[in-house]
Image (cartoon, rainbow, N blue to C red; front, side, top):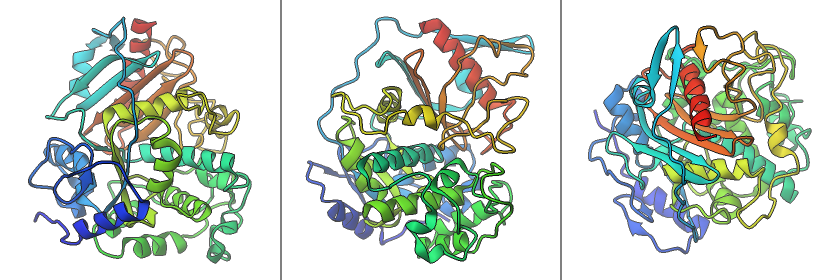
Length: 432
């Protein structure tokens, strides 16, 4: 059964008013945006079944996330079109177990719905599939975690958060006596809180699956907060890395407590408009105008995903040169935690930082070209389930963004993530 809340237009209108937007906008059905995203699909898949959507539903659902849920709009300001690179990407290829795959093969194997390559800040390659366009708003899934961690850095630079060593309870005192008591913001951001969370996307009873069910009904904020508040401690904070959308949700909540603003409003004020983004975006709201979900729910155009990557590539500087992230923040974000389970034979330097991933070609990968030694090193990867990606490599001045509908939410690192690492390394070699 197709579901659509009759309250969404009211909620969205409230969120626009709350954030005080003043730019010209257009009525796009139940939401006001500039410009209206296209395509505008008439029938939306049921959000209750998000983790079980088929490929067609994923395409429609991911580009209509901003309509499927209540949301807060973050407005763009003046922007400059992205220039085209003199050297464009025509093809790139990689090998696995003696098989060679070209760029066209990669796009099919990864179910790519959109891809953009910026070299030296200029467009070297752009690709759309499934009818997507430059105005399509695609959902980020957990790529949004990397946006939230960046906003935390901006809040520290502004003095709204004192330090990553602050305890969570300094901002949310009602969590004293819970499993979160004693956890620092850094541990929360590195997913080393020690608080138990089941992220299994295939288990309908997992904590993450329960979170998605909360999102498909009224009272989402209270429903999710009840789950997160009553979690148990699994081990001491700081000892083990364990990926947690529950912890990421709490990080977003802490940020909103610290700034007194929703994630969308804070993003608009500090980064979206000052950085010259070209289109409005929408953040999935649990309480419109007040609370947006910190674990995912960031929806924006392909080019604006890339502009965010460029901001990270510039070490947190706006186009006018103003530094709005703390000094060395991006380096610290890629200082992968050495907690147990982050370090492995495949990634001996660690797998996870400030909600950014180390998705370099595994050092123990065999029968691959480029080789681990010849592949991209020291990249930051924002990764979301089903293949949402922002990759930033400062040494090569390279940003690659990708929208996908992988058949599995989280395939093994020997599958799609490995092929992405190989292809991106091959692209870097082609454009070097």
